Every structure is written in structure tokens, then in C-alpha cells.
Length: 289
Image (cartoon, rainbow, N blue to C red):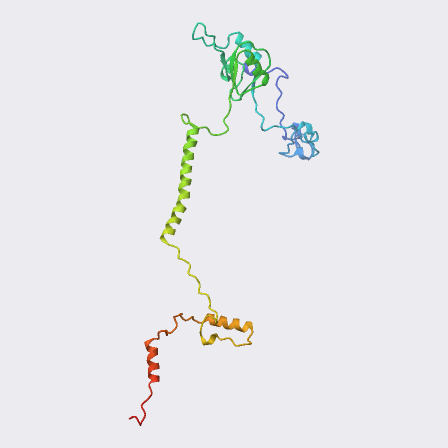
């Protein structure tokens, strides 16, 4: 026997069926796809969940749709019983006491330590301590959340808990007291407010000092015709009250002459006196000449 005589055992290898290679090959013409239809075409694949256009099963049965809470927090959970079992075996290191009479400090347990001992799979999720099991060792447990029963059991064993809280608002920088910053900011705001309030008042005072207000002058009241001694002020007998009122209004519009003591005449202009003197002087007659 030679190498070219070697053959696999009968039935161990089945050759691939070659379709579309003629009638003699057994899979010619339609190549095993049948006659026409969606499945006979190229690219006519149908998804396995397709039910021919009728309402699918996952829509006919509402309870299979489910509900997903977008606000749910996925925790890494650990029971206090599992932590207590490892603590009794000495899995957690205890701090040595400072003095002879001092008691040993409780061991610290956090997510990193639980990851190291194999109770937590990942550090990407927050840690929550559950109250399943018993705990007889005092531990200082640090986690993101505790159940009420877990907190009670840890404190009953002489330990304490510390909840890691995520700040919801910006915190002050290290070494800076928020109260001091608030006081300084408040003082600056008060000073700025005082400047704003003092500014307009100062300007108004300066304007009032620069421009003194003028005193209101008394208005001249119209004098009645009876008070003035003019010839036009005589009222005829039998005239009505309305006529007298009209004449008083006309007299009020005329300029009022200055009141002077009796026996004195009002001064006249020189220009007005000259024509009067010229008119009084009579021309000389012929007999006088």
C-alpha cells in the first residue's frame, strides 16, 4: 500500500451537494428551492419569530413584555453571616491595641477587602450589606447601603457602620470653610448694595443744591370794577348780574393802574407831554400882534 491508496473509511466523509449543476447532478434547475415563492428568491430569508403577518406571540401575551425600571440600582450584596464566618476564621486583620489594657480595635471591612476574600465579584457596582445570618465579631463595616436588620446586628455585636454618600451638590475645597466664604460674599454684596443705594441719593442731593427751587409768585387777582376808581367802572342801574360779571371780566383783562395817594398824578412820559403842551398853546391873534 502506498500513500495514494489511502482512503477514509466509508461513510466518514460526506461530499458537499453541488446545486444548480444540471439535471444529471440531481439538484439542477431549481436547486432544491421548489417553484417560485419568497423562499425561492435570493435574499428571501424570513426571521424565525415571523408568524406570517399575524400578531406575534410576544405581543399577544402582555405579561411576557415585562417592565424595566430605569432608576433601579444594581448592588453587590453580601450577608453579615458570610462576613462573620470569615471574621471568625481570621480573614480580616485586627489592629493591635496601643496599650496592655486597651481593647483591640474592630476590624475594618469594605468592598476592596471583601473583593480580596472573594465575597464580592466586582468593584463597579455599589455594595449593600444584608442581614442574613448571625454576627458575633465587632466589625467596622463601610458600604454604600445597609438594611435595617444588618445595621442592627452589626451594632449589637459591638461594631459600627459607615454609609458612603454621593454628594448631590458641589462641595467646598479642602481648607476652606463654607461659612467664612458665605460671610465674605455677604459682606461684599452688602457693600455693593450700599454703593448702589448711595449713588442715586448723592446725585439727587447734588442736583438739589446746584439748582435751588424758585419760589412760586402770587398770581395777580383781577380787580372788580367797584374797587378801581376809573370812569368805566360805573354800573348802570337796572343792569342784570350777568352784564356786571361780563364787565368785570373785561376790566380784569385790562392793565391795572398803580394806586397812588390822593392829589398826586401819574407820571407821564416826556414824549407824551410835549404834544399835549403844543396843543394847549394857542396861536397868537392878529390884534395882539
